[in-house]
Amino acid sequence: MSQSLVRAISARKNQFTRGFYQRCVSSQQFHSRDQIIAPNCFNFSSLGFSSTARHGSHQNSYRIFGSLITDLNPAFLVRPTNGFASVSNLGSDESNVDDGDALCEKLVDMKPKVVYKKPIDFTKFDVNLLPTVMLMGRPNVGKSALYNRLIRRREALVYNTPDDHVTRDIREGVAKLGDLRFNVLDSAGIETEVSSGTILGRTTAMTANVLARTQFAVLIIDVRAGLHPLDLEVGKWLRKHAPQIKPIVVMNKSESIGSLDEVASEALALGFGEPIAISAETGLGMTTLYEVLRPLLEDYMVERLNDMCSQDDVLSDENLSDEIDESKLPLQLAIVGKPNVGKSTLLNALLEEERVLVGPEAGLTRDAVRVQFEFQGRTVYLVDTAGWLERTERDKGPASLSIMQSRKSLMRAHVIALVLDAEEIIKARCSMTHSEVVIARRAVEEGRGLVVIVNKMDRLRGKENSEMYKKIKEAVPIEIQTVIPQITGIPVVFISALEGRGRMEVMKEVTDTYKRWCSRLSTGRLNRWLRKVMSRHSWKDTASQPKIKFFTQVKARPPTFVAFVSGKTQLLESDIRFLTRSLKEDFDLGGTPIRIIQRVIPRGPSGTGGGGSGNRSSGRVVQRTTSDKRTISA
Image 1 (cartoon, helix red, strand yellow):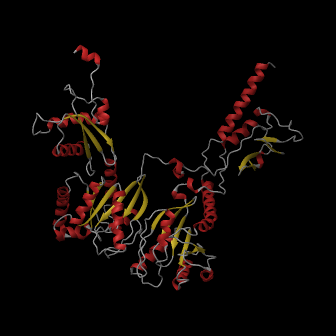
Image 2 (cartoon, helix red, strand yellow):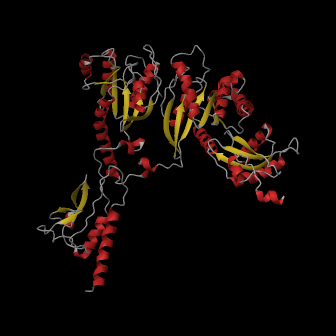
Image 3 (spheres, one colour):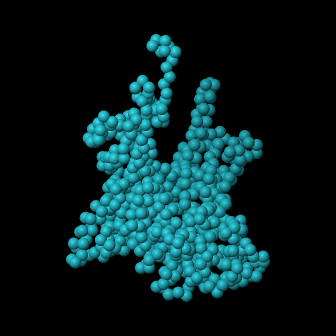
């Protein structure tokens, strides 16, 4: 056999081996998946692999990445197990397979077995895959303070009210405890000896519904008060409503207590094991809490991920945190309005579940509750705020904190849904009160999209209210446009949140407003539009008419434009209003604030425009200097 033929055969062997290995490892993998181990060589002459009989006394051995596995039958498939190769049978009927090509096809076509094992890196997983931990306990034991400590932000209202309940709704967030990541829920204080019709009774029932979807719980007691009888009642309530959950008992407010042995021995009466001493205010004991939580959360994640892999070996890209489509950014929607106009009822209608507490009492919502849900493939964060009131000196405690939190939620949102009460409109004979006008103008000043929702339209049914129903639908959009002239084309939706009517129309208007709020227009299209618009504008003085050399959009969210004007004459306020109105009409930008900034490009000393390419980008004046050559020629 010639040397050229030997080299060709060797090259063919190497090419086949590399192709086989790459095909085996080309499946999707991330941090905790076991690596696919492909054989360097098998004892199959038909495949062209060289036998490993030359490796000393191992006559029937085969080399797998440098490790020898003795007596390897061709009917077995090599699989990895946390860095060690494991062998699985392909079937007893194929134990004597001699055809290497058939075995190769069998090996390649089989999906790799994905096995998840400890340790688990929680930072690499999507939020929807993480376990959920609920913070529970009687009122005023520090649940909200621990919630803020875990999420590393002051979101939940914290106020010392022994005779009142600050938290009424379920807040959820992503806890960051060291390298642990999990969903944490802040619940209202549990009191078992209350009637079902009261606020405490409704909050306890809502907590029981959410607890059914929770995997773990942390039972908090106040170490300063010792083991309270209400703590024992909460323990009995937990055993009744969540027998599958064994909560972790923590003793909060232990930063100033010397000996905790007495309280710890009392806490054993709950029957949930040894308590942990922590301080949510100072961060004491967070390391101990981490050491207790980590093995529990890891066991849950390993079991859940392996169950998912048994159904489908390869997880979809939607569950990987590294594969998020950045083109579809989440939509932040804040529901604002006066107290008792139906904001919480609207949030429950949009989610189609009883997520927040509702009732006839005014000022029922205190915390700004943030909820995530999916609408037509887009992630939407709904924020239900407390009733918007003018802050006075009499507002102290939780009421004052709620007002401040509502204003912060408005500034963080992308689109503002201003909820009005149809009954109040009829009584006051005007669409918007002073406080509602303040909300709308604040949204415009912050550059947010605005959608107006008129709720409680179900109260205007019947023949006696038919005329009033028609008048409201005709007069409200016109009056709103008159009160808020800064934005044209504000969408107005008439709904009944209690019955769920108009839910899809609300989300459609919100998403359309968000798209307009994020819209971008090309520079060429804008300048072609500008030539047409300037020709139909009636200028006060044609001689002093400003000349717009260049018009471009510099940012979105909200749409912001820059007009480069030459000469000393600048655009007047009426000219800017004309351009703003024309932009909204011609490019369908209603319901979103538009900002126009003008930059002046002064004329040069020779009378020619000094707006070169550098001037257009920076808006600065460039002084021209004559050279010596031009001076001599002049």
